[in-house]
Amino acid sequence: MGGAAASVSDPALRVRGVDGLRVVDASVMPAVPRGNTNAPVIALAERAADLIRGATPLSAREPGRPAGVPVA
Picture 1 (spheres, rainbow, N blue to C red):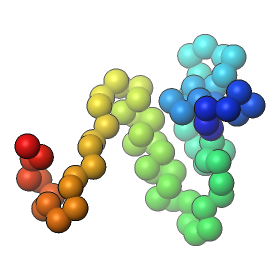
Picture 2: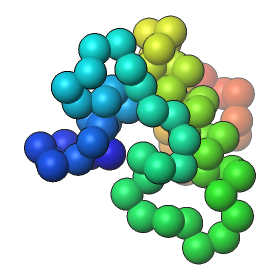
Picture 3: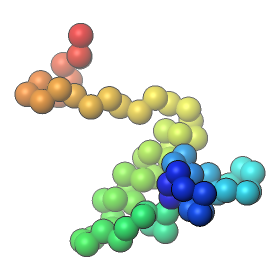
């Protein structure tokens, strides 16, 4: 996965050269996680679901701001 022409998928998880196909599993990770792969694959799947639905991803919150408090 990545922006390089040699990578199989682009950052939106679309397979290069194949229309309508996305890969959403651990094989698109550029490096193998050292620990359990469950959480990274779940995060990848959540990101893919947002990309497919066209939903805007959640923005990062400011350090020190409690969760649920909107950023002005």
